[in-house]
Length: 297
Ligand code: PHE
Ligand code: CO
Figure 1: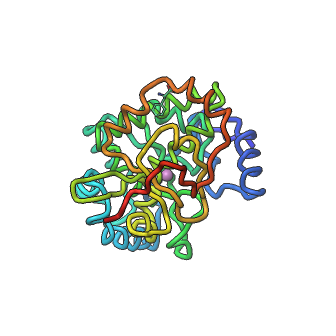
Figure 2: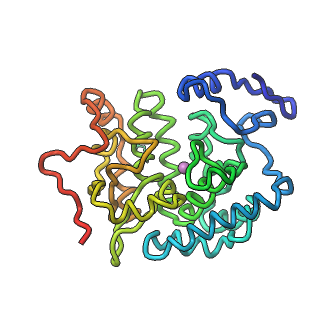
C-alpha cells in the first residue's frame, strides 16, 4: 500500500507486513491514507464526536481520582497545567505549552508507526500521539495505544527536563541499536521505564510509567500487590528481562530519580549489547540469587 500526500509517496508495505506477522494477521486500526513521510497526520479535532469527548472525560475522571498518592509529582503538576479534563485535547495547544517547558512538540499519528520513524521523532524531541480514541467497550483495555494512553500517559512526563532529555537520547540510542542488533534489549528498557516504571519519593513508591498511569487497574496493583516483584533499577538487568504484554507486569523496576535514569543510560551500550547477546533473557518473574524484592512497608 502506498500513501500519497503532497506528492510524497510513502512505501508502507514492509511496515504493514511486519505488523500482520507480529499480530497474527490482524490489521492496524488507524487510517494511514493521509500520512506524510514521517507518518504524521492532521489531528482533525473537529471530527471528534460529542460521544468521544464524553468518553475521554470518563476515562480522565476515573484516572484523575487514582492519581493522588500514586503518580509522581511531575505527572500531577503537568496534568494540572495541561487542563485536559473536559475532552480530547487539541494537540497544538498542549504542544505549545510543552515546547515552552522542555522544547518538545507533539505530532499526530494514525497509530503505531515503524520503529525507525518512532525513534527519529523522539531523537528530534517530537512525541507521536495517536489520534483515535478507543470504543466505549474498550474502556478498561485496548490492544493498541490510543489517544488516551499516548496523551494522558506520556505527555505529562515530558514536562520534566531530565526525563525529556532522556527520551531524546533514547531515540538516538535506539537508532544506533538498530545497527548493532540491540533493539530487543532497548525495547525492554523502554517497557520497564517509560511504560511501566516506578520511582522513589520521600512519601514512598510512585508511578511514572505511561502504561500504568493510563490503566485503571495496574496503577493500584503495581504499588501494592505482593504478586509482583519490585527491583532496584539496573540497566543490564532490565535489558535482559522479558516482559508481558497481555497481563499486569510481574516485575517492576524502581528508579531513585530521573537523574539516575539519565546517568545510567548515558554510557555507550555497544559492549553491553555484546555481553547480553551471549546470555539467555530472563523470564518476567525471575528473582535472581542475591536480589531483593523491595519491601512495601
Ligand atoms: N547510551 C546508549 C548507547 O550508547 C543510548 C541510550 C541513551 C539508550 C538513553 C537508552 C537511553 O547506545
Ligand atoms: Co506508550
